[in-house]
Image (cartoon, rainbow, N blue to C red; front, side, top):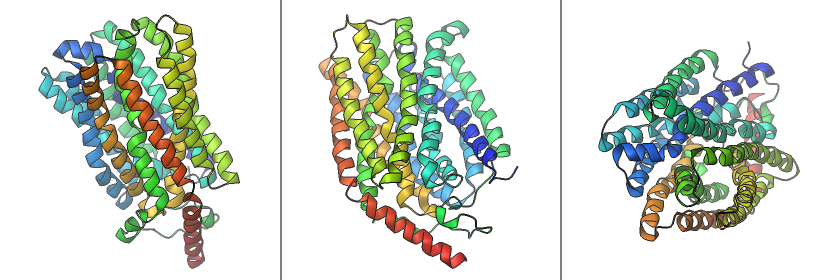
Length: 429
C-alpha cells in the first residue's frame, strides 16, 4: 500500500499508538509499584525519587542526540531500535537484586524515553498542519491509557503472577515485538511532504539537515517561550506520576481497590483531555494563529485551580475529591498536543526532530529534578499534600505567563515559516 494512501496513514498512526501505549505502560507503571519495590529494596521517599530522576536524567542527556539522528537518518529504523532498547533495559530491571543495580538499570530505561521526536516528526510528514493537533491528541491518548494499564498490571496482575518483576518481563518482551512491527510495517516519508505548499507535487526535494537551520530555531521567539514553558510545565506531571499513588494511600487512606476505582475513571477522562486539546487547538488554529496557545494557556490555569480544590478537600469526602480530580484531568492535558504542533508550525521540516528534542531536553531538565525535589520536600515537611501542591501550582502559574508571552510572537513566526515553504515550492516547480 502506498505511503500516501489515506488508509495507510492511519495504519501508521495505529502502529505508533500501540508503540506509545505499551511504552508508556512500561514507563509509568513504576509509580503504581512504589510500595512493593520500596519494600523489596527498603527504600525511603528520597531514594525512590532518585530512581525516577535517574531515568529522566538519562533521557534528558540523550534528547539532542536522538533529535540529530532523526533529522539525519531514517526515522523508522531508529524507532525500531528504540523499541529494542526499551525491551532489553526493562528486562535488566527485572532481574537485578540490589538497590544500586536497580537504580542503574532503571535509569537505563531513559535511553529509549527520548525517542519520541522522530515519531512526531514522521507523523508531521504524513499529516498537514490543519490535522496535526487532532492526530497528536489521538497518539497522546496512549500516555494516560498506558498509565491506567500500568496501574492495573501493578495493583491487580502483579500480585497474581509473582510480583512486580513478572510484569517487567511482560512489558519488556512486548518492546521487542513492537520493534519488529515498526521495522517491517512503517514506511519512511520525505521530510516536508505534508506541508500545504507542496500539495499535489509528484516529486519532493530532499530537505537535508543543516546546522544553519538549527541556529534559526533559537532565533524564533515563540520557541523560547515554548522552551521555558516546557521546563516548568512538566514538573506537575512527574510529581503526580511518581508520588500520587503514595499520597492516596498514606494521606487519604486508600487501599489498592480504592485507588483503582477512583483513579481509573480519572485517567480515562485525562485521556479524553488529550484529544480534546488537540481538537480544540485545530479548530481555533483555523481562525487565528494564536489558537493553539490560547487552548494551552487555558488548560494550565484551570488544571492548577482544580488540583488545589481537589487536594484540599477533606479526606472523608471522597465523592467531592473524585469530581474535582476529574475536572483537573480534563484540563491538565489540553496543552500537550498543541505544544508539539506549535513547534512544527514554526520550524522547517529538516530540523523538526532537533527542535522537538531541544524542547524535550529543556523540559526534562526540569522534570528530572521533580521527583528528587518532591522527595526532599516530603522529607522536610512530612506532608505529601503540601509538597505536591506547592510544586505543581507554582510550575503551572509560570507556564501560564510564558504562554501569554508566546501569544505575542507566534503569529509572526508562523507567517515566516509559511513564506519559506512557499519560496521552496516555487523553486521546485
